[in-house]
Amino acid sequence: MSEPETTTIDINGFATRVWRKGTGPKLGYLAGLGGLPRWMPFLDRLAESRTVIVPSLPGFPGGDRGHSVLDTHLDWLLAVRATLDAAGLAGADLAGSSVGASLAAEMAAVWPASVRKLALIAPFGLFDAADPPTDPWAQRADAVPGLMCADPAIWTAMRSAPEGANSIAWPIEQTRASEAAARIFWPLGNTRLEKRLPLIAAPTLLLWGAEDRIMPRSYAGRFRAAIAGPTEVQVIAGAGHLAELDRPDAVALAILGWMA
Image (cartoon, rainbow, N blue to C red; front, side):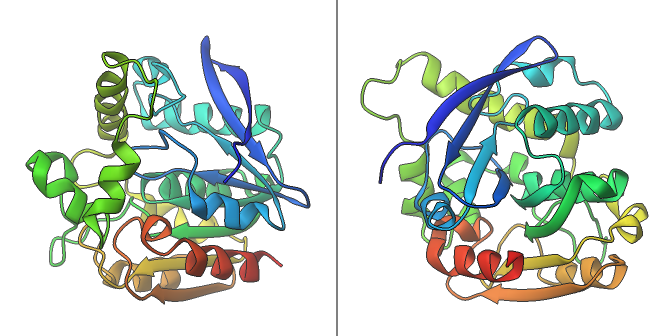
């Protein structure tokens, strides 16, 4: 697995990492809970036929402390829109996972021309008191890997410090990513996104891990019913909340098929 090209863009005064790999039409990806401390096999699968562009979200790994100046939901949406534009993703296909999927959906709703086709992996943003999501910020540290992935070892390996990483900076970056997501999605991930889903005209693929222990699968139906554009739901066997970590090939194949 070769490393992607790495560049930086300035978002609200903070240097923000952008990864790029592959050839073909552009496909953007917004990471899920915890962000991306390292490149992953799922992105390599996408890069076999697409130019995959992965900008960091504010406060996530590669996003420095960009979340510290975002005080409202609108602040976040404007920062993500500026990030996509600066990364060269205006009008491109866009995929996202978990919290990143929620923000991808917001882009397609508020700025319809900014997204051609959309793929959302277990997005945050909705709340049903009769079937609530799991609050990832209220869990013991040892319980988190099993909530993120069907195979907890995959999450643990993703978060482990790579060789040569700064032993002090690495855990700070991981904590910062959790804090950044909490600033917009705590508690329970409810951003009242359902009010804006009818504005999404982009063809949308919804992917859900069959073993997702964070976002109930019933929410896939709620998203599908509310989105105005053509929408399809696929369930990924053997996958948890971050299905792209558990089943990189299956998730990539579904997204590439949808984006064709």
